[in-house]
Length: 381
Image (cartoon, rainbow, N blue to C red; front, side, top):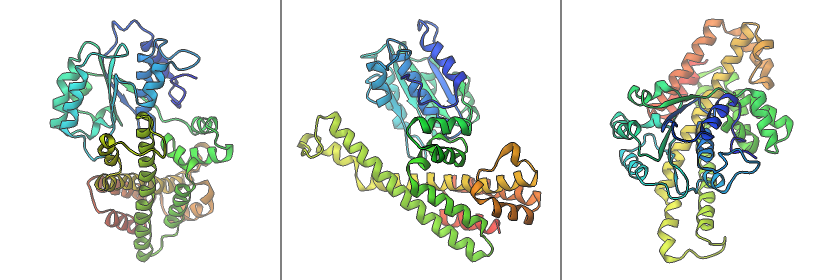
């Protein structure tokens, strides 16, 4: 089992980074920018690269070394990951990372700092980071992750080594899921509906509720006829997003509490010692849970926009007689898609894709989800 086993569809990148990790370290770049579309596995690539760099066997052994396992589990003392479910990354968080980056590694050859979604930094926060990226401490490596290089300030781009990830193919995602014990039929369907997004594919493969919610949304979009349909569909979608987010956050909180117990040598039924009680209670603090639910709700709604766009993508495929070459995402709904493709002209299909893009921008700008989706669904009539 290699540290790269969870990286899907990135053979060229894995070969390149694997060769870097196997070098003598004297000429390694110390600031990296790992870019790829949502679901391409940016943070997974960063963690695997970190595991290879920290491991004595450079991640090339038949089994992961202890150092590699610690990195991949998120418990290596020299590897720090900043992952946020906030809208922006705060300046205090970055200052704390900089302090950490200047410490000598305690266990491995490198101190590695990974920042997921560096595009969520405001410009003044990025400026705090700039000097450290330009002149890292002697044994420190920075790995920044973003959807694309254009999402990062030019001053950061010019000081980092760029790694560009591809969108995994449906076949590659399906094979990955099958390798993780998912049945062939479900793996193929989850991979197709995810459109190359590994995280979404895994969600659809393990969460039948999320998969059913997507199916209902597509049927609802194809059945839009009146403004009342649009309003009802928007309300149902927003409520469903809140329910999905609550379930996801509840699951994450349970995992974090279990990990806290494991790290501190506590059993499932053991009482939390007084000196640890504050840290344990902070995991499930109500205001923190509420904030995470809000953030996850936005992720569910963003996923819904991708599903809506896939309907009009399929319509365009049918209108251009490209089904054999491009295939349909929503294959189960082919009859309704053919009917919609006949009702719309080609400009109408393209215009509706633009409407989805507008809704995505409004949602990213903190627009009211109910109003954003009511407006979108009315525009699709």
